[in-house]
Image: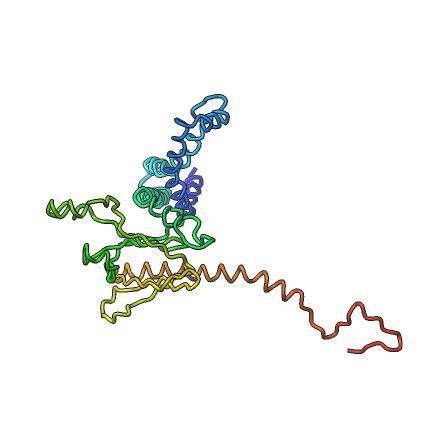
Amino acid sequence: FQKLLFSLGGSFLYYADHFKLYSGFCANHIKVQKVLERAKTDSAFKAFLDARNPTKQHSSTLESYLIKPVQRVLKYPLLLKELVSLTDNESEEHYHLTEALKAMEKVASHINEMQKIYEDYGTVFDQLVADQSGTEKEVTELSMGELLMHSTVSWLNPFPSLSKARKDLELTVFVFKRAVILVYKENYKLKKKMPTNVRAVHNYGDLDPFKFRWLIPLSALQVRLGNTAGTENSCIWELIHTKSELEGRPETIFQLCSSDCENKTNIVKVIRSILRENFRRHIKCELPLEKASKDRLVPLKNRVPATAKLGKKHVLKV
């Protein structure tokens, strides 16, 4: 039985990071609920769903199937907690299961955080993907399962239209595997502190809290330590959306300041890692063609063309 407990705890410890992939599914479950709401007003859609469940059992509905992974991954910590409570506090299996419990609690916390982010920013992400220019969209989807990091930074060179509102604008930076997103969301707590007459003017005709949103795909992304302004603040760094003559897009530089050097180091490290991965991905795509070209080339040394017909007295020596 002890081996079984070690095996169980080890499995959760080994796959803890992989369980974070559930975050994309759990966040998208919000979309699923909206889609399934159509069955209340769309008779054809309702008939389609009913045909998939001829026995009319609730456990066999599409909604029930789709909620199961969400429920299961959040129940794993409860299972481990129960097992921990049943083991001797001084035993090795108790320690092993406790470590597994901590790992899965972090997973559950991560999934809940991703769901919260999607609830707050999901419509912005979807709109940015839809609004991409060009015939082919480089970023086809922004899945929460591919969100690697997010951080709040100060925007030191905001656009003139935004700098009139506040001098110390804060951007939220979202680093996905295929793009970086910048969002400025107006803080309504600060707005409540404004005088009533100022607040009324500020709100007139503008109820969207997202005053700025920007998508930078990996192909047009650069990151730079320090800043072109030459200030000595060690927490400053820059994101560059590179110029594109094809799309008629000028270069845009975002001068940003993290809360401390550690946060700056972490986010720059993650951005550089996705840029390296993107470079490797493009290299791999080019390799098959390069390899095929090499395979078609054969060395001429010590080879006689198969079509050459040589007489016995005129054998070519090489």
